[in-house]
Length: 592
Image (cartoon, rainbow, N blue to C red; front, side):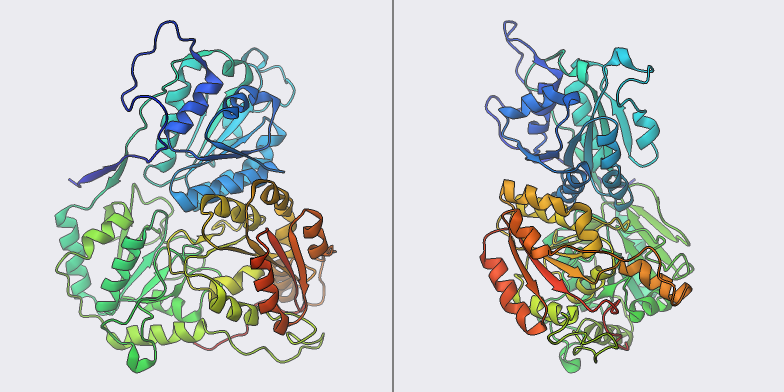
């Protein structure tokens, strides 16, 4: 039987006695359910809630008035949901969003779907109609479970005011346990005002972090020692600096290449200091064992590794659709799967399944006596290919429509070259979905955990809300968001939230005047017949300044570095409006 390690969630110290809660003086008036929800969130360690206010949860808003929890007022429920998702991704504690019934819940749905497919902990509180009005087609009435039941780990409605603290504690536990995900909590407006109980709430529930049994580790060691071309694929949540660094040192020492799942690029550091294994002789000293990522925008060398491996060990990431190029790669190789819970989302062969928390599993693995005899040449070739793939190429030659760089358009490859030099090692990068994301995913290295927030389900509009949340969660870290013009305006209004709450980041808005991903598909399937993909854009720099943010337009590669330094030094949320050649769809092809 596997060992189980439990982890108590960290939470903010509050006035009064420590756990367990002392009995309440009979003369003390019980809190309302709405106020008790807030008290329990405080106890769970929640520092911020994001939301658009609604009359359906006024009592919760009143409870937040005197709470140490910051209430971040957003401009759209989709922005609130994405901020909560980003908070969960970056901190490990569920991010919290609060919205009203009907239309508000509908607007937040995109974030719940993203959190579910991305396996990210999140709580969505939804104000509901009074209990007595149910089933009468009351104003903004809808079926909470019917809407969210297929895309949330759990959906619960608070009908008993005395259960408020328990429901919150259990929801946090469900969101964090096993495969993390979103929990949706319905809060009827009349129930919220009813007496609920003492102010102390309940004890936060410990979260299990299952560990592999010794026999499971020994079996995996034997598999590694038999393999000539072992491959590790990392993904999922809660990777730490220790777990990532230890895995990369171990993999480098044994010449085992490590790939990342789609948009899980920050699970492990992309480079290490000098160490054993091939490196200096190939001009790759310090690059470690990280050899790229799978999924959209991946290098061909990464796909070949998945095809050629004779053992593939998935740590925290199932072999899913995007990772396997639509269920076409790596399905039949010897496979070890390490996930906390079951094999949800995995397709293809499984030879050994270990129910374990992947980052913890890594720390156990690296202390074993495993001595894999891997193919050093295969490993070295993968590192060389990754180095070529991620080195920004020179600006492409001019296209028929004008220069791809120079003084007419900004070449994003040149922009990435500047960012590689300027960004701090622990900078947080955010982006949504679209062709613009190909550049940062390919060229910007990650050296610290919790340094990437991007939607694994391909949701547009996430980059700016994620940048707001990242700045508020980590006020001492640099935050940069890369946004396409289409993606940016889906939640660009959250720039107002950033200004209002003191979030600071630099947003690069890539303006090519179209929904480029869809246009690219049209050019392949329906050449010469673009339809429904053209965009008419504002002056994004002037738009940003109207919010009280910093705004500047850049039309030349040579001007980008100084513009970026000015934006960074402004101390404000900043928008750099980058004019891109509308014919460019992706970075220049590099043979690997």
